[in-house]
Length: 137
Image 1 (tube, rainbow, N blue to C red):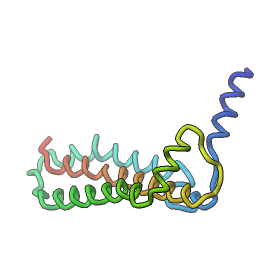
Image 2: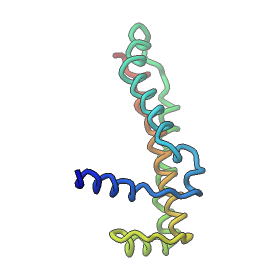
Image 3: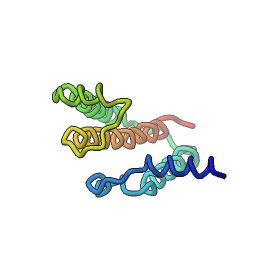
């Protein structure tokens, strides 16, 4: 029983709250992400195949090209952001294994970059949705 208590205590200690970050969209609760994923899976596994069953594939080639270009630029910006501010790279190098609990500006910048990366992954779900609209199932 003590082992379970220790595991739960460790898990609780990992779930640190930050009032600044908790005010951002999709961060303060796991439910918005769970709802987005449930809607995505519902469309990809059930609605998409039913919708495209008796239809011709949609011609959204240019929309997909535009989407891929924008995602490439967005992810490149997030990657380049780490090198625009050299102190971020040094911070990551020095604190990767030993997290820093201070409220420094660098930590806030990393949180912003991480949030943008998470948003880009949510937007990436639309890539699969578009493939369902193109491919005749």
